[in-house]
Each structure stands twice: as C-alpha cells, then as structure tokens.
Length: 107
Image 1 (cartoon, rainbow, N blue to C red):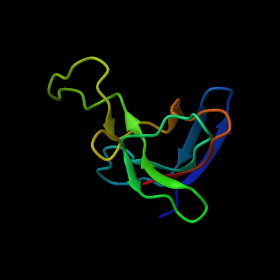
Image 2: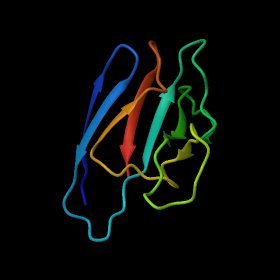
Image 3: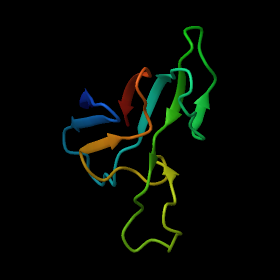
Image 4: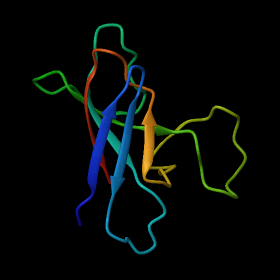
C-alpha cells in the first residue's frame, strides 16, 4: 500500500496532506517526523531514535485529539499518534520551528 504525502512549509508550522487507498477498519494514522532541529528549537518528548550521523532524530508526532467516547483527560493532554491516531487526511505540525529540517512518514 502506498500513501502519498505532500508537505507545505509555513512560517510557524508545516501543513501535511495525504491520501491512500481504502484501508478496511482503519481508525487513523500515526505520523512520524525525522528532524534536525535548529539551535534553540525545543526537542520532542516522543523521540524514538537517537540522532543519526547527520544529526536527525526520529520522533512520533503528538496529537491533542483522542477518540470520541474515550476517557476524560485534562485539557491540553497530548499523546503520540501511535496512541491517538490522526483521524483525517490533513494535519498542521506546530512543533517545528524556523531552521528545522524535517521529513515525515505516515503509517
């Protein structure tokens, strides 16, 4: 299965859009970023791999939206998209900053 991903960089975010063939019983998508952060750019608590030889780390993007009918959580709670998958085909990543070099993978 192939997922086509388009990323549009912005001033304070990256807008991602993707499409895929129909996936039976799909409840959402996990999103990973491979990023080389600029000096002063905040690091993610969802880093899953140490920096490679080029200085890129792999992170799981966080989501602020759980499943409808799920347990109550405090406002502002974030969880990795492997726990709270993105349930649409568009996403704005506000955890990137000017000077960061980033690539994404949708799962």
